[in-house]
Structures are given as C-alpha cells and as structure tokens.
Length: 363
Image 1: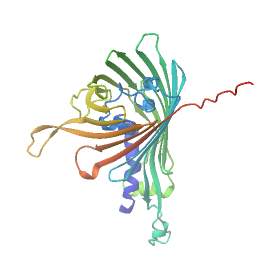
Image 2 (image 1 turned 45 degrees about the horizontal axis):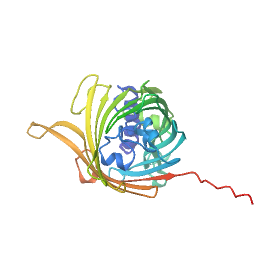
Image 3 (image 1 turned 120 degrees about the vertical axis):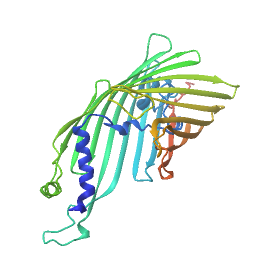
Image 4 (image 1 turned 180 degrees about the vertical axis):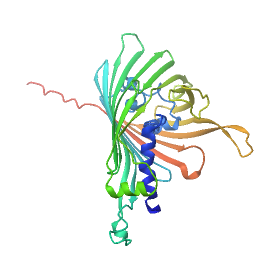
C-alpha cells in the first residue's frame, strides 16, 4: 500500500490544517503579487498606488491616474513545481472613489493518482494512473474612497476563497480586509487589516471506497468535513519619498506584520501576537527606470553548533515604464536555503484611458 503514499500525504495534510490551530491557513494569500512589491520584499502596503492595491491595500486604488488599469503576473516556485498566477482590473468611479477585481491561483498540477494502479485481479497496470491538481483560488472585490480628511484614503476587500484537492476535497471561504493610507508631505502611513472578521473555510471531503480502504489499511484517519479559520493579521507601514534631483527619486518603506495566530518563527515572537518586519527601497530615474531592493523573512535560527543566528531573505527587482505599459521583474529567494528555490517573477501593468471622440462641427 506504500504506492498510495503521496495521495495520502496530500489529503492528510489538508485534514491536519482543517483540524488544528489556524496557523498558516490560506497562506498562499501571503506570497504577494506584482514584481515591484516582491522586489521590495513585500514592504508595500503604504507605497502601493496601482491595480495591485486590491491585494496589498485597497485604499491605494485612489492612486490610479488613468481610467483603467490591468495587471498580470506569473511565477513558478520550487523549481517550477508550483505555479502562481494573478490577474486584476481596476477603474476610477469618479474623483473620490475607485473599484477593482483580483484573481489569484496557486497550484500544483499533474500529480499522479495511483489509487487505480492495481486492477481487480491484482495486476499492476500503469495505464490506470491518472493525475489531479491541488489548487487554491482567491477572488477579491475591492472598493476605495477618498476621505473628507485631506490626505486620507480608505478601502475594503470582500474575498472569496476556493481550495481544491482533485476530486477528493474542496473548501469555500469568505473574508473581509480593511485598509487605509494617509499622506503628510513626503511621509506616508499605511494600515492593512486582513481577515478582520476571520476568514472561514468550510472543507468537504469526497473519497471513494477504494481510497477509504487505503486509509484504513495504512492506519490513516478518514478525513471529515470541518471548518478552517484564518485569524486576523495587521500590517503597519511607513513610507518616505526622497527627491535626489529632478530625475532621481528614492522611495523607502518599512512594514511590520502583526499576526494573531500564536508564535511564529519571526524576529519578534509572542503569543498570540508575533511581529515580522521587512523593508524595501526603490530608486527611480525619470519615472521610467527603477531599481528595487528589499530584505524580509527575518528569522532566528541555530546552526549545527547550536549557536543562535539571524537569517534573512534578500530580494532584487528592476522595472521599466513607458507610455502606459510597465514591465517589472523580481528575483525572489524563498527561505535563502537553495539555489533551486530562486524564482524569476515577471509582471505587467497596462494603463488605459477612455477614448474621447470629438463631435463634428456644424457648417
């Protein structure tokens, strides 16, 4: 029965998350979108002012200069095993409000399903092997508005989460995010409260009798329908714009992620609140060429001699913006453990204005 190990591992992991404490629930929504943000180590809730605001901080949608914006991103993690795709649309409603829609998919495809490998007569038949996907989806509906207080914008997300493990398990979840940005001269402050009401994922399992027999034969617990909860996370940000010359400008930002799901292996651990700081910077030339750097994923670890040390994840990115088209690239090292985990990330943004047709003059 060892040939079913991978299938059992996938479904068993889902059941473990659904039954245990909510730490790392819906963690695919913590990866980030847009190569600009990833190049700055996700220190971005205050700087964001484009279509990606639907993910980072919905209040940033008020920074859109054109009538519409479209954003796209594709990334591959763990040497191409996992695929991460993102698409978004945003538009101005009027001078005081804007809206957006975002779609995220994180998945692993073509996983072998060997539950039918052996036929009824006990013969191995490799033609009976099929494949399935494990994928997480998020749909974000965003709204932003300018407040009566000068320099203050606020916004909210309503999000729907769908998670699927082949035909074996699926979950639906719902949640709300709130965000705000405040600007005073060259300083800017940001707040993003994710899952403010907690996000609830309702898991349901559909296992055929053969799979149930495999679980029983290998001593695994049969998964039951259950509820998974994502607790709130608050992100605080401070941003400073530094003008070096008429063409050079530097944007710096530091964020503090305050998780509420117990101790995490971050720089400041606590129970129930842990604090994960990360910092990023962007150097821009003539609003056309950009260089980005960032440091995040700061953790306390021990080496083989049991000595304490601090590890961190550096990120790097570049960007080009010309005539309403922005092309961004980021090099992200997941966990700073192996060259195989370096990911090349590209994203695109398109600014679109409504066509204005002039009326013919009367003779």
